[in-house]
Length: 139
Image (cartoon, rainbow, N blue to C red; front, side, top):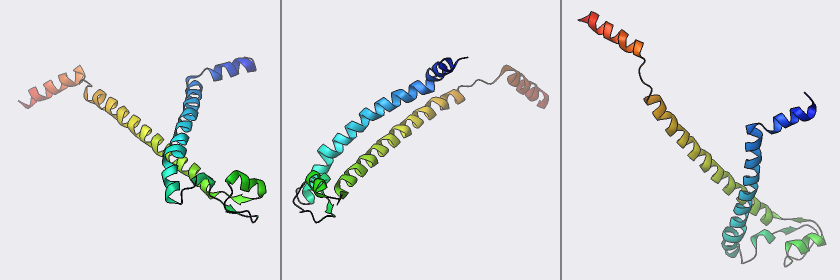
């Protein structure tokens, strides 16, 4: 088999296609969570900390003025952009929690599907006959 044939066979396996779909949906879902954090969650938190955009919080490392935006301060030299880091960290925590809840729900559904299958298993006929013989011998 040629290398292209092997690659085609590998690429068309179900797991690879599922992974590709997961990556695409995950990227889109990541943008939704990013918007949630930056547009809905962080503005009230920023207001609590003085009304500034929380992503613009930084510590100047090159004697920049504190009233500059993060982009302007970066142009003037190095900064420690802790507000941006905290925003991205909050994005990650929310995304990880949502994924955890989705996996937890899928596991519960999987367990619910497996439980009736085990309970619905009928007793084989030979076992029933053996039980009947045993009960007859006891009498």
